[in-house]
Image (cartoon, rainbow, N blue to C red; front, side, top):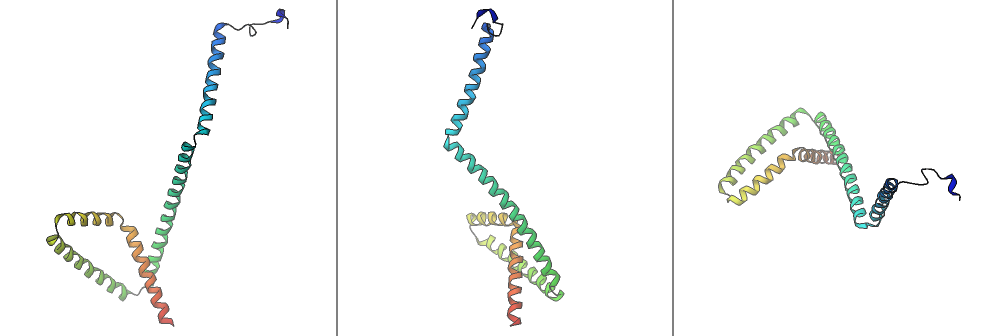
Length: 155
């Protein structure tokens, strides 16, 4: 190497050297962080768990939507194929059940201790909040009973 062919890049200034050192420190810091992240098994497990949890929640939401849609279709088919007299009797029975439940609820409210009334109120609130799934389940049970009954009459 000869000293006659040196340029300014070959003779860096102290400021250039500081910048190079700072740049090298930054790169080294990022490399250390990357290595530390690869070595942190606990954090990786948490990330994987969160990802699986998210996927499961998305799949559950999709399945719930599909079940609700199917239940609505079954309920509509059941209603379409049920004779009007049966629908009227069902409506009358439902009205009687509601009336009886209201009377029983009032009686229970009058006779039950306060902690029990609070628990019952919480249960009623939860049932109201989940009305659609409860109705869908009821429709599915009714459909299953009608199918079972119609199959037993065919034999």
